[in-house]
Image 1 (spheres, rainbow, N blue to C red):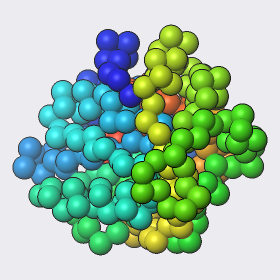
Image 2 (cartoon, rainbow, N blue to C red):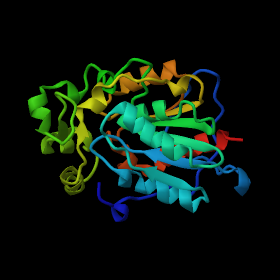
Image 3 (tube, helix red, strand yellow):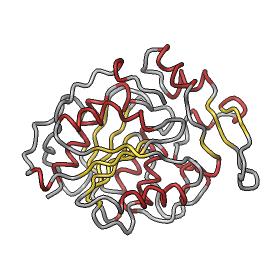
Image 4 (spheres, rainbow, N blue to C red):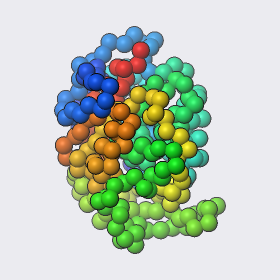
Length: 280
């Protein structure tokens, strides 16, 4: 997606310390960012952010700006959107070039990617899921949207399908139709912004949604889960279920959309900040 930094109000100029939580998932309401944690510069983790389907790295512009203002290295990495196994391997190769601790963040399908990419990368110290899928081994991203997701409607009303070179048999690229993007994917953004994002979306292969997960890094790495109650793509009920089984620290944002990371980057940055402050 193209950059809309001027349209984003980034309230979080710094990131902060986590609230006290028990061993089970705790639910809080997203509001203002927590107080800054005081980490020595030498121990600050790098934050790596992975976008989802029908998006690109600029989805994270608000969060990257806020994190960098707070003194953290933040990198938004391109997700190929081809196949879960190969997409995760692409991200894992990048993670292995980063020295020091990593906080790994995924939005939407990017949650499935970080779930696999973090496996076997010991310096990934925290996972953050933002309106995201967090599959167990053998599960597919497409199976985790939730029973009442808007993606469960007739595919002919949801997508424009386009062939692509080298596609596996039966696979096609999917583009969200304009009315679906504007009214189900980005419904809390100004309409002209949502239409612009629709017009610049990146296609995702059907293989990305049907490839079974080969790992479940949330079983061994602490995780945080940001859930927008207005999400119509991966439903809040599905996200809560995944978050609870992962024993994630949960933040619910009341309202928003599947693109709350763009419309309310301050709230998302606050949760990333909690994960950052857990790294010692």
